[in-house]
Length: 358
Image 1 (cartoon, helix red, strand yellow):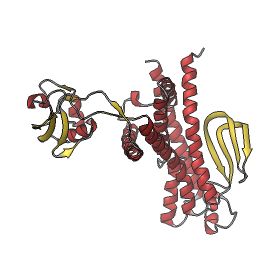
Image 2: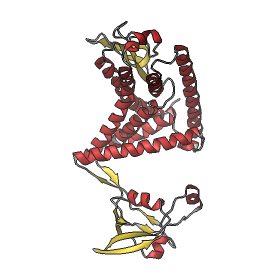
Image 3: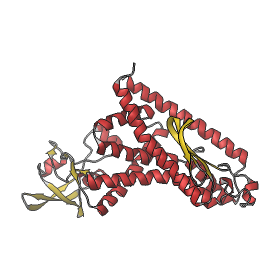
Image 4: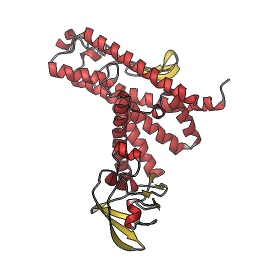
């Protein structure tokens, strides 16, 4: 028998996944309609249709029995052949007769919609709920560390490092980890400005592996700070770029097998996290949705055949060559891409299942 945790996780997963799939496909749909491509079906889920309607563009919108995923079916094929390429007015309204730029835009609009949704959710949360930030303040000083030997004390507020102003503890970390030379710290202590020269050091063997320098201070607990509309958008964009950078680093580690399997989450892991997020309240649930939306957009932009990024790569190749890749080669590349994605999903799901029994 399945316990309540399983059903809560499943519900959480579907509540998060369904809007993200809908937004992704809506991006494709709107770009297709805008570029004169006929969309035959807009489906949330797969299999037999449960409910649906037909709109003024003669598109059948439907919700299907199997709720995992969805698709937009456009008139014509995603693969472009040379005959279609020669005459864009044959079979007008077909995807494979649209211009190269139109096809590129239609395919790119799905991932873009997910990334934009993530930015909107994060920015809205920062404005109405707040953004967790850690003040540039010393909470504890590690004994015999560079900070301790230099005279830094708890409650010292760090104003700047090497004349570069810091706004939160993350700013301090970014500066320190990259330097092994002496740094000049401007400190506010008891309403007085004082200066310390501190030389970062490697403090433990793990730091030696990552070549990460530290001075030996511990941050205070994060606090929620609400921001105005403009600041919320700024931090929403900034954090999305940071998440994208970390995602790329993580993906590189994944394909080079330089990652701990405990850090990998597939469908089972995401479902479990989603269930936990429901119990932690709406802000946490929405933030998780934003993270997954950005991740979904980035994953689909990978230059792997069968993903949106794979088609974008083929269109760039078409632009360079002045003609489409041979249709047989396109089919073969997509088959390889599907095989790779299935293999990757099996491996990630295997890691997920292993974690359930640890």
